[in-house]
Amino acid sequence: MTAISLRNLDIFYGATKVVHDLTLDIAEGESVALVGESGSGKSTVLKAITGLATNWTGAIAVEGVPRSHRIDRRCARQCQLVFQDPYASLHPRKTVDDALSEPLAIHGIPDDGRRVETTMAAVGLDARLRFRFPHQLSGGQRQRVAIARALMPEPRILLLDEPTSALDVSVQAEILNLLKRLRREQGLTYLMVTHNLPVVSFLCDRLAVMQKGRIVEIAEVARFKTGALASPYARELYAAGASRGC
Ligand SMILES: Nc1ncnc2c1ncn2[C@@H]1O[C@H](COP(=O)(O)OP(=O)(O)OP(=O)(O)O)[C@@H](O)[C@H]1O
Image (cartoon, rainbow, N blue to C red; front, side, top):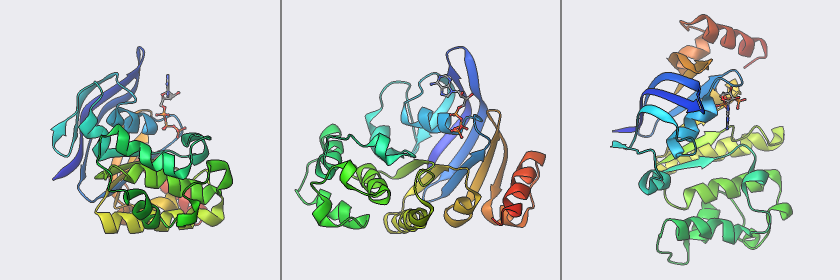
């Protein structure tokens, strides 16, 4: 089954087209990276899938069901977005418990009273942090809360927008290990925007290289690691990564 199918997708902000004729299929359980220079349209693709960018033409289907341009509750539940900066994405006056309970209310999911506790445990958060506020947590703990919040509606797909780039280098690896384990344990599909080529190698099966709103190459990560890429831009990217020891 295809988890996400994007067909001939054009995405606009006002009259400006920022994503051009993008076609990409992501299989269930697969992890795909969107890489490319700043402003190439990577985040905009995630926004269109989740309904945050509504001005698009073409087709978007999630788990085989086409999404409409309007609020799509089914898609919103199955496809959860995790942002780069957990401090900005968590409400400063809401506790961990509030942040995790809210998605259940939004999606009308009956709560057995245990879900907050079990999800905190699944992401490696100590139960004693349950009634803390974001400012009382470390950066790594906050990103764990953001990931736990995304997991609360039991999604099939996580859309990850630079999930570790706002974190200290020392905690980036912890969060990457967590994402790797969660994918394995819960059979999740990932579509991840990243600038970080080691993250692609560690967590992804394929990568789609974007340049100026278009996909210029889709490659297996194994192929990327050997530098066997077809497009000049993707080769350039590989060379830049290789020179940094990626
Ligand atoms: N809300 C918006 N209104 C108008 N233009 C926007 C908006 N958001 C992004 N853009 C423009 O759309 C283009 C694609 O932006 P997008 O954020 O998707 O790129 P990106 O590849 O994710 O970049 P980055 O790696 O810097 O996050 C850019 O030219 C950007 O300036």
